[in-house]
Length: 292
Length: 164
Ligand SMILES: Cc1cc2nc3c(=O)[nH]c(=O)nc-3n(C[C@H](O)[C@H](O)[C@H](O)COP(=O)(O)OP(=O)(O)OC[C@H]3O[C@@H](n4cnc5c(N)ncnc54)[C@H](O)[C@@H]3O)c2cc1C
Ligand code: FES
Ligand code: FES
Image 1 (tube, each protein chain N blue to C red):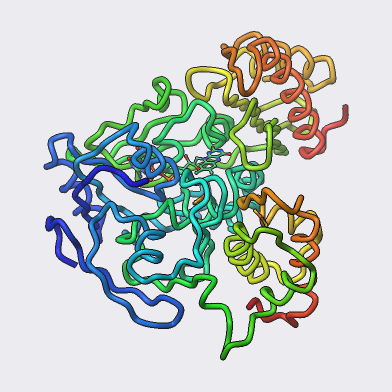
Image 2 (tube, rainbow over the protein chains, first blue to last red; image 1 turned 90 degrees about the vertical axis):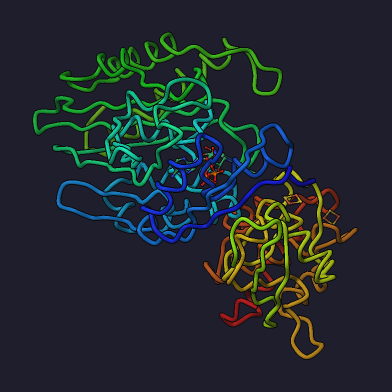
């Protein structure tokens, strides 16, 4: 099983890649780790005249570490993310999520950048990106810009990254206070896409008040989404079991899952959102040093 | 490598030997290995990125060769199951699969062995849980996995830190 013919280009620099993409008149797509794109091409669900392989562009392989943030180049693999102390020590949620992506072979090739751009409604990285309020850095013919996590996904398999633009890196900012995070994913079998996934990061101040609440849901809407009402149930309040329960319930009401024969009914998934959100919040609060 | 032509010249190292080939961009690594180099030890099971039978090492990392284009492997070093034996002697991992009966039909075995090679390189002394996690990208329809886990464990115990 192999794809229809295509032209293949392998630029060595970001500049060259942007130029090639810009002059392709919409015929070209980026090839990163290929873990989503190659199966699609092989099954001929998509056909693409030109692939621009960004796998050899060194500047996209960097992990940046500044005082305020960590920046993950779009070609850093899931395996590198999983094993990076810089990332894992500052953002344990990213490390936790990385372990849930597919299997070792998929993680050796796949990238967070590719996963976000692919925008699978069931992608794990989307939930994490939203919970941490990440920023996507993109570069195109008109220069560079940033896209925040709330305007990144625009629907199933679509994002606000233009077809003439390349996602270069994803940036995550530190937050103040005592921080805790957790990812709860239900999957049918090892390495499967989520039936439901809930990513959570919270922080509390010395009085126990919630000073940050980030909750990203996956597999329960047209794209990974923020559980904004659930976050409101927590923000500024002392985190008690009761608040956690009402936030989890709010999350289960505000998502929009569909019935599917493989992973269950919409009602079942709503129920799982409630369960996973509660579990994730309890773990996150405990990790932050909160008392429940 | 010239761009824009229908076939591209690639050169890579496969099981320690330099090889060159002219491939269409859409040629999958697995087809290059099996059809051009006659290295049929690398199996094609599902052909949909799920079963891991096609697993090889690229620069030491396990990858599904049905989910990579040969052009992406240009310049890299590939190890297939044929590359594990030394001077006609099976590697520790291969020995361990034989010793512990880690296979029945053997179809999944090359991929299992390559995933094991990667796992033991990263983690020379994995727990049972870590072994199951490490081979989670490889499906076996025969064994029920218990003997595979035992084989991986045995390979770890007998390897003395040598991931081969
Ligand atoms: C067996 C298997 C299991 C999987 N399990 C999971 C799972 O459990 N959870 C999960 O979330 N995902 C899973 N996936 C999906 C997969 O891991 C990700 O979607 C994938 O890694 C995407 O990243 P990539 O680098 O491989 O992107 P590619 O496949 O190369 O590209 C994906 C899309 O994004 C575009 N793109 C990629 N990079 C850029 C960029 N820098 N700028 C602009 N556009 C870009 C491409 O043009 C393409 O349209 C699985 C995949 C497989 C094969
Ligand atoms: S043949 Fe490649 S994963 Fe099954
Ligand atoms: S031994 Fe038959 S598939 Fe594994």
